Length: 422
Image 1 (cartoon, helix red, strand yellow):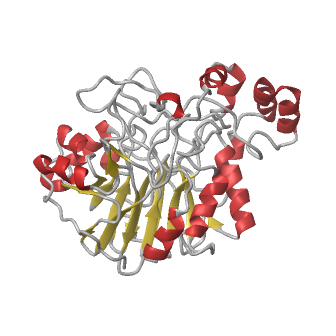
Image 2: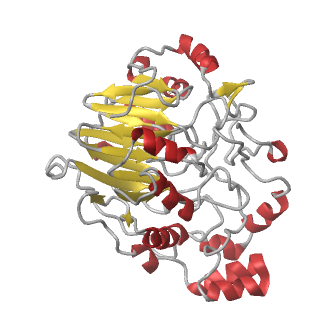
Image 3: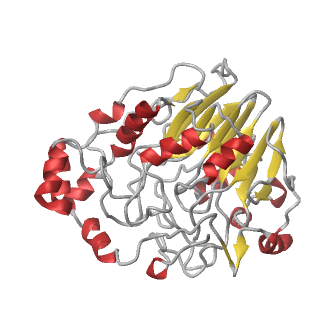
């Protein structure tokens, strides 16, 4: 079990104490939260190329599936048997995962909304329906939020879950959003990195990640972001949230691992924001770092397939993750949205995405639009854009406005690519 530093309890962080806790955080300085290492939300001088790719017709075609994404009914209903091994994961799309672990249910980053946006008519829209209505999921013992961006913290979903009476575990400062949306303060626990809270027989621990936050103009970096460790009497799991790669994952693994399963962000990467989202290869490396350099446990790739947030082809994160996992000797699960599996058993590994991906001709056209003849040739040979560097596009569309502040749908880059934290 992980060691507990400054353990928290539900109902001990009323809004009047929030600001003081934030100010005392080792991660907070000069009016904002800081990353564990120097981090840029976007490289300087990239705006023109970003806009050029954003309006590329061929690029847009490759960033969405050409066919209907297959869905499966989760094996989590009242009539379904509990997991035989004591641990079962159900990926419902993007970063939303229901974990059944040692007799408890933990719901990570639930996003059931149609768009990850403040608007119903604009912003990234779902590429597939939800595999199961939120009301049909069994009640979660705790809902865990990694950070406040729209594709991880969804207001309609939180409001619906609040009516179930579940608990919420969130990084420092995020509780203000939940309270604003009707979650009772006594149901919320806000944690700093390396703080823990008990939920039944489970211990939930917020751990360092390399990302950023912000739900409004001029109010970025005021809430914390985190990866999460959930430890039970028999099993341990890890959810990365959104993050760039850094050496701290090895430290997390040494301190809290090894893990029976990891849920790792492997999509929405770009050369224009290399510090805040991992590539698939970095995601696999993180999985091995968490187990002391060995490919222990099962890897569930997350943060791909559901929303169009980055320049890479829609299916590329899955293809590159499978290839990198094979090279590393890691066990990887690539379920359809809604598919349940037990990490200790047979993992879903059918490359289902290939049947609905855009044709190779579109890949060549898209690469040509960015890289000229050499790009088209690489695409036709199956080596672009994923085998090398991802192409430029819009920054991740996962930043969103704070309550009471002006809202927008694009991520707020730091002026001039200024570093964030470190």
